[in-house]
Length: 175
Image (tube, rainbow, N blue to C red):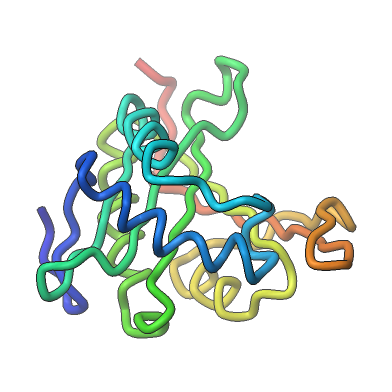
């Protein structure tokens, strides 16, 4: 458990799934930030939490006794050589954006992933999304490319910008 300004960051537990699903649902229903078209229910989110925690991590931000956001890491690609890289995502309750929660969650997530041997993290950002691009740049991510018109949602095509950040400075061969 890590205490950072906007709350306490801790490992997610199955009981957090319902609240994580609530936080995520508006992103799915009302925006192109997520390319899912139907919000997952608590059961599905619980399965995602368990899958992420097997090799990566899923963390929640708790403030005032309730979950106000979450972040997770997952596989970048399925081929074994990609094992040392992970994709990352962060979602906050709509009333908690731009209050330091994303930074707190990502900071703890990066530490956890580095401890598990992850060397590089990547984030795909559906465009436009100035807030997410700003957060990722502020946390040391660099833009590495954009996939053009790859997602159809809310009546239009969306680009996805990819950002990358190294978690470790040196890269000896993996053990």
